[in-house]
Length: 456
Ligand SMILES: Cc1cc2nc3c(=O)[nH]c(=O)nc-3n(C[C@H](O)[C@H](O)[C@H](O)COP(=O)(O)OP(=O)(O)OC[C@H]3O[C@@H](n4cnc5c(N)ncnc54)[C@H](O)[C@@H]3O)c2cc1C
Image: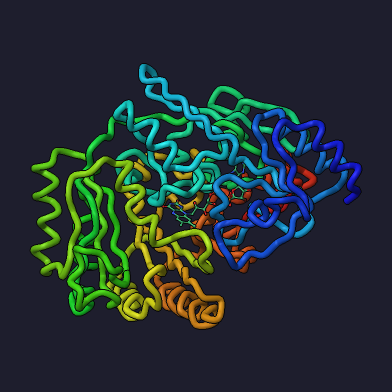
């Protein structure tokens, strides 16, 4: 790309444009997954919607590949690429709460940690991810699964409006009333349709929750998973939690002689009354005696950052996902066999229930294409040492292959890896055909292609 053209871009945006050789380039080109080692032509630190418009126009006029980066957590590293112009939205993190309307407007590069901190001041929250450093941009556009999904739906179900920069560089408002086809596609179709510079969400009264992890012996794993399956089928919607396989980290609540061993865990979040929550969580203790637990009342925002230390930047990531309609005994057996082999403390399998309020929304009402599933398991391989890549990706692949016969054809787009592009139609599920139509309307030249890509 001609340096003079980049010079023109620098003059037309308010934020800095970081190029190879500039101080800070190495930091600016990095994303959360350290396996990604791309060298973009420029990283534009956008500070406004106008900066995003200028960056999109620049990319289309010069024919440069365009990468859009929200929180940078995409496992395939879609927020960067060799030779690309990166629209880095991390400077767009203003969050404004309207307490009366119970909504919050947030910049397209906001992290959930920042969003939760601001809305918590008003005693409000919406469904977000379980790690505070994840961006709300990518997470919401792909669906959005978290502690509050059973109570309040997916993150995308709580989206009421989006400000979108299209492939033509136009700025549109998408909502039920304006550009409803685009609004439909943004709720599950990923970053395929434009750059969202502002998301407006519906909020709910959520303050202190009863939450945290319980660790059980692997010998109790079948009993724990079976009991959780039976419990969650019609559990109160105040309960949002998930079973996991996890190596016990060196924390004070874990007996010293058990640190480093794998366990089956239940991570809970209860948003109702403390007394009722204690009763519900005690039900898990009746199934098997926890080896360790760290459950108690805490602000919702605190639970959302409780596991951040397990996923610092700089780890290698390789993930696989599935959707499951019915969690059979055979599926549980496969989980126990492979979950027990979780190789490192950062890696995990989370078995997210997506029933409750997620099922209140009709399967074709938003683009999220797997409403009929009740579970969204993710096998998240995360490890520090690149020399362990082979062993860790093998664990993820073998685990995924073992649960595949008990799962639907696709997996959640936000948990997919770079080698999942061939599964993209299955991953977008029942709404893929309509997604392609909307893609043809809003991005026929596939300007927004660095994502789980919907070919126009
Ligand atoms: C540690 C970790 C924890 C996670 N936990 C959860 C969880 O609890 N629940 C869950 O549902 N998912 C979770 N995820 C998956 C997460 O939803 C995806 O990785 C998501 O893509 C992250 O969004 P991001 O903005 O941080 O990523 P980015 O890499 O910045 O972006 C991901 C994709 O979205 C596009 N994009 C991002 N922002 C915008 C925007 N404003 N406008 C248009 N396109 C945009 C990008 O172009 C890219 O294609 C987690 C991921 C990680 C790494």
